[in-house]
Length: 291
Image (cartoon, rainbow, N blue to C red; front, side):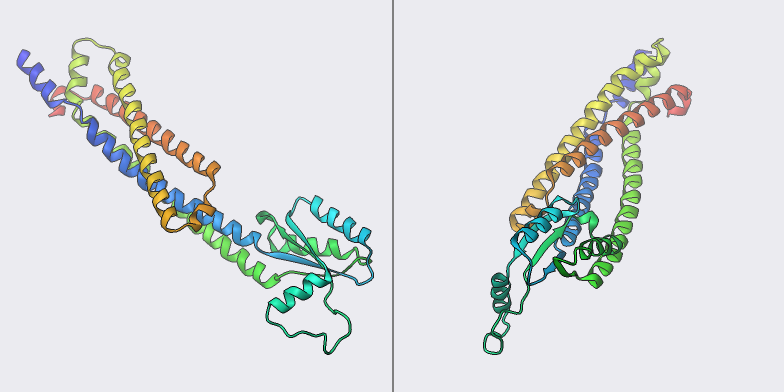
């Protein structure tokens, strides 16, 4: 019996290092994919927020009319930023763009004043922008016309939908594969503990008594693996942002925190679930089946 105890103890030596390493690798790749997804999402939002609507004003408008319209647009939920372009500023931009000066042909500046504003990304849609245009054109005493790149918005909307669908499908597949890989890694690590579990059962230990230290260890292992993966991901992010500075502008710390919290919870929950399931499996098996 003593020999059996020593042999089983030797065979059941925990493989915590391999369990932590396996979970860390999987969480690292999940985190990298999540980071790429966040950057792609943020880049898409910035592209949409670069779209500008231009409200051209009539020549006879008063300053109070202009201020009233500016306040109205600024107060709308779709407005991200707004700029008033007077006639002289419009002329300067015209000349800076390489166009010919028209003062030799015309006595007056033909360029109208305008209110240019950018929309928040979730309002940059074909139907939404058409509705905004129609609303502003109702103020025809002040507004001469409203212009925006309608064809670009339509193409952008279709492209964004395709990209988001592809990323959503890839995220779903990657998440499922990650859970399966972590589960298999934990189960392989628990395989070395099968004799220890059965020995404790044979001497009368209850299921909860046997499972408690192993589930606690699973929580610690999962948290450790997640912490290591997060540190590695953050280090890689910092390295990429150093060589590609524009990536810093895409970083959203709020979303990044959610990603890291997700990795932390994923590492703990899957480790805990897989460990407890393995314990129950070996408790139900006969001793001869463990060999």
